[in-house]
Length: 350
Ligand code: UDP
Ligand code: GLC
Ligand code: MN
Image (cartoon, rainbow, N blue to C red; front, side):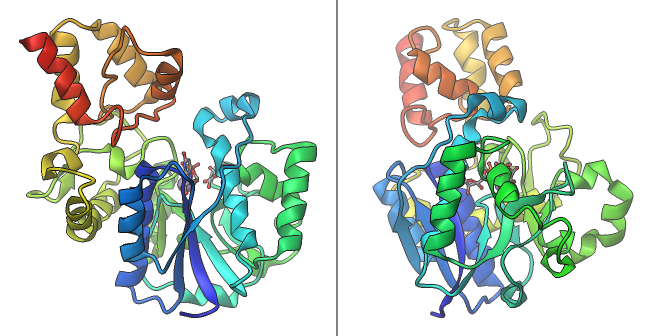
């Protein structure tokens, strides 16, 4: 344990899978830093136990949500209001310096040298390079900064509805003042950049140190085949032309995380964990007539996610549940789990 820590965040069991792979990748590459995960009460008890197996510290914080649907809709990511919860990372004053990493990142090598950098160091955002991407950043915990950030959030809000807009407003001189605070892009290579500038990726991609699965579709939404060690290619994601990083994410997940999820009863069988059956359930869901095909395909194309489990009660579901579904937030460990869907299907098939 040192007074320096990698810090990540998970507000639910899905992102926790990402956090576990990230933590595991940091360990695999022998970090000497403490590993901390911030969680909120929505993370299940069993998942907290699994997180404790990988992280040195599992710290409960309360949800901070911008509820700023106008700006979040502009970004087409209505679910990201809760990312303001990230701000809690400044309150970890037991550490003198930290590196925050999104739960959808993974390291390919040891990156402890980042602790030589100062607040606020980050890599450019691929969509607007004069802003930094807040998926990986070096910072110094401080209650003063924490309070100022909260104050700014309540006074002005965030221009993207999430943490990145707010942090770029607060650390507004990042773009111009000190080049040492610009992390090389290889410390936060967004998976979408491989398609938007393929020649650069071919040239520099081999040096990648951190992969960031930025965007609505996350590695844990794919179906994986452990025999071929590859994700299924039928998911509709035109930005994903390079599946090498995804396959690596899944390899870490199946080798290091899945056994823990099975041990703590979070998943009951390997097929469910590999999302193998969700495609089948989806087909059955409309083939046995309890929802129209167009409704399912429409909802799924709006989510751009082919392998999330379908809603268990498409006609009877509450508006809130429908809304959650349409935001791509299927609770597939809980209410929308395969078991529940299967039970519903069974009642139709009897
Ligand atoms: N996050 C979370 N729960 C959510 C959404 C986001 O815990 O429902 C956390 C998680 O650490 C995630 C980060 O906030 O990696 C930023 O969100 P995301 O990675 O989805 O944004 P993107 O990088 O795709 O823009
Ligand atoms: C960005 C970042 C992510 C952040 C989100 C909301 O896309 O990658 O870390 O949470 O914007 O501001
Ligand atoms: Mn991210």
